[in-house]
Length: 208
Image (cartoon, rainbow, N blue to C red; front, side, top):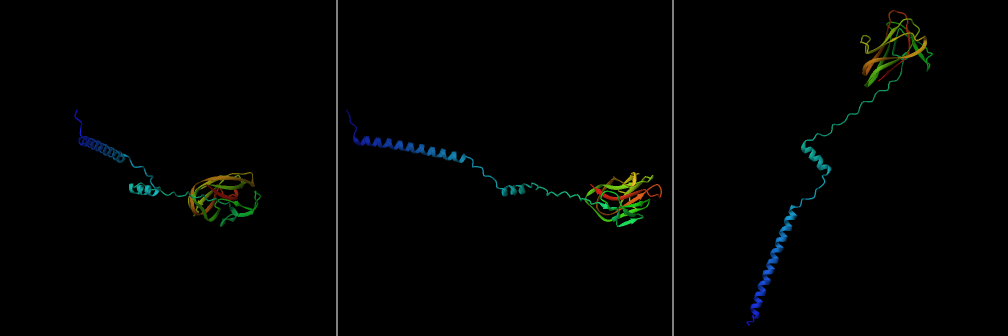
């Protein structure tokens, strides 16, 4: 029986070992390449956009910025115009009143008389009505009118005044107005079918 010599055995063993190492090395390289491929395919994590980045993006895309809002004008709270305090009383006289609150009213009003109030501020929000505190014992129904800036201008509001039951029996009547804004000279004019006295006025107040 032939016995292999030690040198031949070692040579074959060394060759087999080298082959095994080479095989393992190739397998390792294959796994390494696979891992690198997987890492490259993994998507990068999302990064939250900062407000500055969003604004920059909006500017780049031409998105319109919000329009500034204009605050609504504040309505003027109108005070009471005491008739006897008008800047001009044409054909009209003041007298003590028996109306609530006391003070004075104007009376002996007839056709063609008027009251004038200078520089009355209506403001930006339109006035749409006028309240009149009136009294009458006349058998004549007359009209009271609101005119702006001149006596000849068309009335922006008017109402009919009839008998209230006495010259000191007071009632509040309301006239609708064509909407009025700005600052004006206000004329309160009076007209009737004849020249008889037909009403008294205590106060006027505009409203929205």
